[in-house]
Length: 448
Ligand code: S3P
Image (cartoon, rainbow, N blue to C red):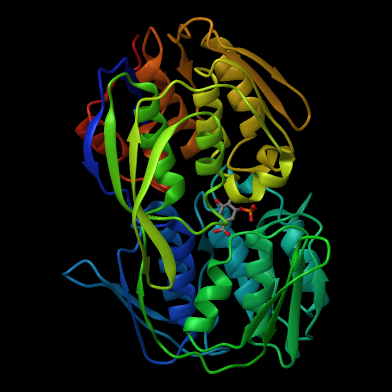
């Protein structure tokens, strides 16, 4: 059971300055643990994100029979069971708040010939799982789910898995990865066609672990990914870069606070993740991308951010897959931009850890920002005067809503509080300490 809530308040800050290292990439951390558990031999992970979401994946893999442990030096060591070698867990796998953890592991268990039952917290229990069950059923898995395809869900894995070619109806790296992971224990070729390219960490990492994966561009701007089934995966060293999606929060805070200069080192800049960078640069942000290099097969750089005057722009829906988790904090930036910022193609935001479109529209309006919400867009008119702030936000078990409003509170006239600090441990343990180290004023309390 969750303990009592611990509210946090963010008060207007002075300049932000200094150098910070954001925690490891959440997407890459989940994938490294899972592929390590499906490989033969030792996988050593440096810089794993030790957040609640990733720890849920680690615990589930242990329950499925893999050896997963943290070493004294902070690295994680996994001795995997090989493709198809995991065994039936004796209990229910609690995936907490993590959509990525449950959807990826539903993919893994879809082609293992035993039953696996998943549950999650109140937020995860509301999220749609049909999007992974539809293709996995075609591969031979069966599911028992709550009404509407919600958790708890029992997966009865296929005894004789069938390879499929599946065109994703929505651009989703989680669904793509669930199918590819199911395809690992399936003979023949499993193919996923995505309407627009989504984060490709799975494809990259599968290749590093020894799987045969081909990626082709499609005529209409999407991608076709093909995996050869039943490879022998070999344990591998993985170094996890800093999470661009976490870096987004101090990045926007530094842009908004006057006379700031912040450097965030070793941040992942995989081009399928950095739509926010492109957007902020278009809005007039001063963000230097320095010391570009490669770390564990992923592009990284140091980001140097200076206070900037932003201007409103239209962000096309086609950019959404490359910045899907960054809209809450972009909406905060837009509240300070001169003129109108229009964010389009946001339907997927409604099925994240909370309905992020509604949460941002409601919270920004309460804080005095001029905002219009439609079914799939947000229009924010900023710049005339500094937003008032002075509100308390129920983050509704959504880490990114909590962090976005704490960033807002650093720049508004009056403080902003959120209901529970613990939710941020899903993706960014130590968020308040990192921000305060740069000069923010985030402290326990709800301003009551
Ligand atoms: C993720 C994919 C995205 C993203 C999530 C992490 C992943 O979800 O929002 O935080 O690691 O594959 P969708 O696949 O639902 O877009």
